[in-house]
Length: 312
Image (cartoon, rainbow, N blue to C red; front, side, top):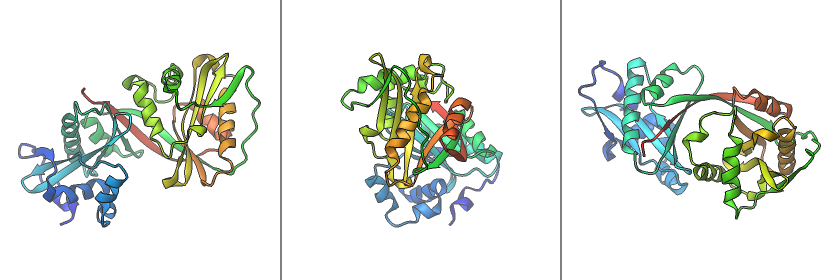
């Protein structure tokens, strides 16, 4: 029986609804509701996910007897974070039920090491917003996903006086664990997010993006002190190079260092085989959006980001 028929709302009462992990009999159906039948129906889907390090074990459902009314999945990511997914809500009541299911799932992972949960929706998905807020998440930012052709000629930028650019020494994590928090001070990019995570977790998350190559991570130094970072990573699945992070300490902003760093990075990847260079940026960070637009990036889609800390 199709998943949507199983969870279709019969009434608004919740006294007969139970929240808990999906058992083996309901697992495939619940995964189908969250991820879509096209993914789950593919032979060997879960085995391939496990082989790629994707943990699909944290799958919860709202049950009314034998009927599944909603489902939620939390996929752990490096850096003690998790991506929250849920079955599509059909109306306000069903969205709140999905939020209750997700909230029960998040309660179950308290103390497991996951410290921050993130969720995404498309603009205008009011029911998704209802579901995420019902689960205890708050809206963090509207993210613009931008791309440019990899081979597009990068504008030459003169070096910033007194600043040297050098590859990150991968044996020295401390440099970035100290530098990254300094670049978040007075940031316009997802403000408040950094305070919810430890520097070591943030670095672990960046290291896990794509196929990490330390040669594509650049540190800007001024008088022997690190003042900015540009982190690039190849993403073979999307045939792109991703700008994982670009950040500058406050005292060095407004001097053209962002343009210089970005041009340096685009020059490094100009001869690679990937088709595009991609990034995500907080739409409210107008200086960064303008910087990327001048470098040839164009917005291809927007997503709404929601976050919540997990109880330790």
